[in-house]
Length: 402
Image (cartoon, rainbow, N blue to C red; front, side):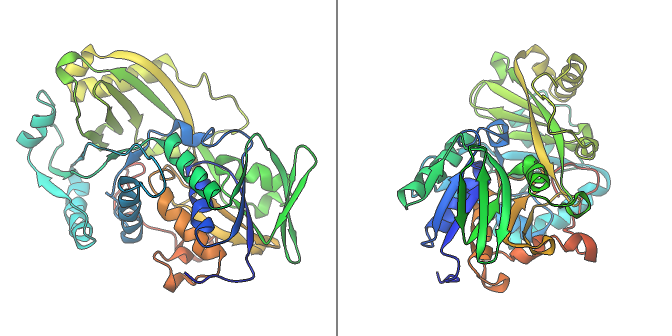
């Protein structure tokens, strides 16, 4: 694939699933890549991801990116091990969202996504004692599932290394600077690395880094963090085995059936996404007893047998949010940093769309025009928030489906 000959070297800050995917996609184009992370690969929010992989989106572009990404993760052999596990996902809808889901299914089928209408009796084949209240219309994605986020990011980073990428972990970047013929990063150690371009795949810490790089507060990208808690429980014996994830928008929750015995319970409440969280705060003790009680009640009301589940762990992770719940993929030219790019504001889609993000950012940075890229990366520009062209969802009040 041709690329802009002026971009021969790139520094990527952030070694999560997205940064590592960008590194790999640039490396296969022949670009000299340096990947740096202040921790280890996937040691940030990637490592705390529930790592669900699905294709049910209501925006055509995002759904096509999800289809590409799931196919990459399912057929990851050329990169490494992704840990993809096919379980299927069940999506029940009610009210206005039920009619929206019917229309949305037509779009998904046009894209080649397998999206089946199923009955309550078919849902009970997976969850025999389920309370089907509010299940006016049910869709089932048989090819969806989950993967291993740490393994996936590590595989991307290792494959990039095999292609000549230099990977530096335990390496904190404290400042980014645009230069006439490129850009540089300054490390906490005092070292400086320079390249033709710098890409920030720095998740919730993006604006902290830009502040320390001299960007005025009023000119920062519209990014903020929201905190999401996940409760892990061990299923009762009668519910063990491979089962699909159950999306439960009526209760603003999802239940990821992981492996043979575990279930991860997470929130779909859009109010959580609208509550900014200070990234400088400690999140280790964020999960409260009341939150655990609330979400255990949700799954027990929906699947009474889960009342016999036992708690294994509870963890908290951060989403890097944007105003429309989709990524910002653009240069910072408006801030005088035309050789510095960001891929942030992933809004809970980061892992599941990381293969597509990696391809798109690599195309953008190396001069592939949007119309010649597999996915039109220009739709994710910073300017969309000022010109009213934000990425739209067909659904209402359902967190992260979009």
